[in-house]
Image (cartoon, rainbow, N blue to C red; front, side, top):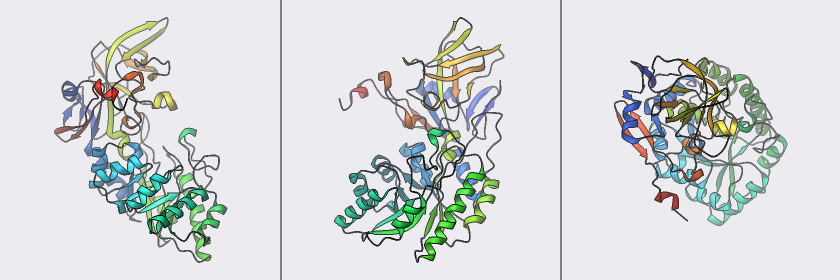
Length: 416
């Protein structure tokens, strides 16, 4: 079989390492299932992003929804990132991680009045608004608080990013953003006395691997900005969103970010505006793995299964999106390879990590790594089937730290 490796997750003498630590050493300390993250990978991704876009020197806001562990947010801020948040909870975590309000963007299509008030009281850099009704609500609350709300409209460019329909956000058939004409009417309205329109925002979706849809959308946004300028409105920033893809399969080529930046930067660099980006998965996706133990192997007719101790309660993406995650042994041994489904213990037929996947024969008690688990993994986990949430470990070269403990059985009763 082929193995998915990068600078931070690699095999040495047939054992999988995270930076300088064997995965088996961490498993021995904390058991399975568990998530393991690499700080080195986070740093490398941020450095790579900044280097690719150095021509336009953008401000980078980490999309907290990808992985909202407070220690990950703290690490990303230490690397120079602000925070892009989508709820009061994410805002709370970002503030607790030490991210100042003026380094935080509050997004989301369905903000409550309480969330808008909390964002304004926290003096966030701006609120991204997505409807006239939301603008009106923000205006009212800002008036009650005696402040002027900094707002950017999220404009929907109606561009197909050619990604999974569940993670597409840039089409008018999606729930996100405003079409150009209603956005123009809002920007040029004098009705909202407690709002200061500071910028404009777009977002096409996630796991985008081509510059073409991004450049198409960027050109539409630039044309719209010029139209607004002709009407006398000068915005200060352009938020290009995120959605840059990562490698999920060993045979895939790495996303060519420098080429992507080379195509996109010329479209926006002469606007005289500050450029924002909001990557999430690009930073954290391949910075993490989910490690699980083989409980049993079984055969039903011609179908062979590996039953493991992690399930859709720990990583729901395969069940939710039919998404691919590469699965590979933590220790490579010379064994016959066969075709397996890798399935979990949850009482659902959709509880699987891999179907019809070539893997070596595995023995009970051995470990598998489910790769690309640093984004939309633990953050989307649940206690379904009354399963305790699993630990998260952050590796820093030759040391590691538990940044989330495993739930106890008593934790399952919290709040009940």
